[in-house]
Structure formats: C-alpha cells, structure tokens
Length: 418
Image (cartoon, rainbow, N blue to C red; front, side):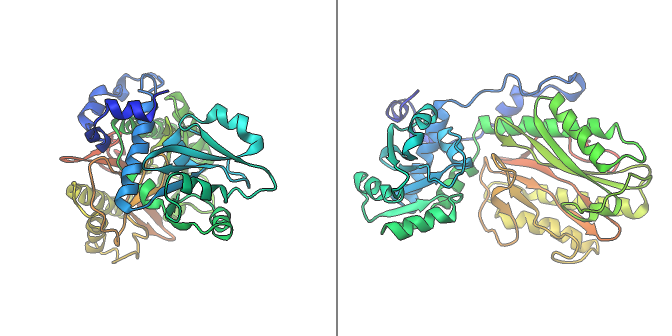
C-alpha cells in the first residue's frame, strides 16, 4: 500500500487537478456494438489503485483548506467507499473516519469490531475504539485536540445520520459545520478511469435496451420487458435493469401502480442503468410499438429538440441553470406550457457512484460547469391520460464542449439508438 508521504513525493500538485482526456477514453475504446457477441464489455478496464484513493483524499484536503474547515467526519456509505475504498454497514453504532489537512485519516470504531476493521481499513493506522457503554462522540474531542484543532470546525459529511450529529452536539462542544461542499466538490470532477467506467456502463445499458426492444410482442407485460433488459445487461457484463411504462402509464415520470399489457400503438418508455466498477449509467428511451400517431411523433420531436438545445450550449463555464432553461424554452415555444406544466422536472442531475448526485441542472443552480463534471440530459413532456415522452443521455463536460457516454443518441422515434 502506498503511503500519503510517498504519494506526495511522486506526484505534483497539478496532478491533483484530475484533468480529463476524453479522447484517451474513447481511444481505449469499447467494441462496436455490431462486433459484440454478448461479450463482457467490462473486461480490460483499469482498476482503481492506492494512488487514486490518496489523490481523492488530497483533493478533499485542498477543499478543506479553501473552505476553512479544520477536519471532515465521514461514516459508512458511498463517501467512505470513495475516499477510503472501505465498505462498512450502516448500523446504530458509530463507525467512521476523520480527515484533516495535515494528518493521516483517524478512525473511530466499536471496540468489538476492531479486528474486522483492521482487515478492511487500507488508509490510516490510528483506530480509536469505544466500548458499548461509552460515548463514541467524545472520541472526536481527542482527535480534534491531537490534530491541533481543538475548538475548530468539524465538517460533517452529507450522509452522516442525524442521530450521530445530534450525539456529537449533545456530548461535545465541537463546532459542527456542513461538510457536503468538501465531498461534493471533490467527487464532481471525474478522473479518466471514472469516465471510462461510465462510458462502458452507458454503452452497456443502450445495448441492453436495443436487445430488449427486439423482443417486444403484443400482450407482453412491462415486467417481462424489464426482465429482458436485466438479462441483456448481464450478457454484457454488468448488473443492471430498468423499468418499462406502456401507454398512458408513460405520463408518470417514475411510473404508476397501474399495469396493462402492451398494445399496438402504445408509447414505450424505459428508464434504467447499471453499475461498472461502482459507476452508474442512466438512460431513458421512448419508442412506439407499431406506428406512431401524429401527436406522438410531434411530442417526441419537441422533446428531441429540447434535448438537442441543451446539448448545443454545454460548455465549460456555463451556469448549470442555462441548460435547463434552454430545453424548457423549446417546450414552451412548441405550445406545451411554461415552467413545469408538462416538463415537470429539472433537466438533469449529476451522476457517478450514485445515480443522482451533485451537481444538478436546474433553474436555480448558478454553478459553472467544469471539464470532468458528469450529468444527465433528460427533458420530457408528460400528458396525463395520454402518454409521456422522455429522452435521457448521460454526458461529461469537456474542454471543448461535451461527450455523450455510450454514444448511440436517439435520432427519431423509430431510431432510439441513432
């Protein structure tokens, strides 16, 4: 295992900027879908190593400095996996780590879990234990003192549960502050490895939809189509799936309890994804089983135009809200109402280790896009009692614009994969 000290000796500060070389990612390539015979597309991807995790920790330390926060506390969950490559269940017992600018991670662990923790912890040798009758929160006082920040600010990670934050407040005089800006800003900019995982994940989901659509038949259930989607993901080497909505059910963005078999002329909306090396895909496609009606085709084209309008302005430095507004203007101009009348949700969300994560493409978000930020672009029009249409692709902001993960963009209601 590489230590933080040796890492800092062999990597310059510039390397922590986690630059994005999307051409390298595409160059490493995913086999063209026409040449794939149900191969595992996740093979030959590079693995994350110690240097990757220490780079993440160093980036978080830089954000602690920028935000004038003295230390960060994180418990089990996605952020622990992201920074420490440690999986730990979320129980009623406090387990987590403290990260500070000038010290290795310090862990807090139930005493009886110590041996198990030593098996899993890869970064940081200082593990402080508490017995069942003791307060784990008071250990934080000693940690803050030992790092020279007694009375300082302790940032609390965004997934730390309320009973823990309240326990810290009740048992200590530590000055708790919001640590989310540290974790969110660190995770927002993806590395080349992370982008490769997302490229493959999104390509697999699109291939899975394509294969599942080839098995459509009148009278089938939405559950059957979802099953085909899951099976196809497995063929390509990933665990994933998606929900399917037929006819009027497609007007519910995330589905409805109402179910009926597939009929000729039905809109079919599928939304889902998979995970590759811990990184998510998110794709929505809308097609028609049979021949599309004039209105179905019209609504689809408005949504496709909105999807394209958002992409047409994506660039580094663009406020996130502008992409949402560009898509919404198309829907309003086409006569489908202003605001959230029929386009009922934001344009998109960040995506990475979580399907939905910081930052968001929504009207009140002035955050400027940076290369390496990853989002979904998913405008929709939902006409309750009739049908809904949504097109969704995940993408990364690049130095010169954007790149759609997995390519295969929807070009018409008959050509969902270009």
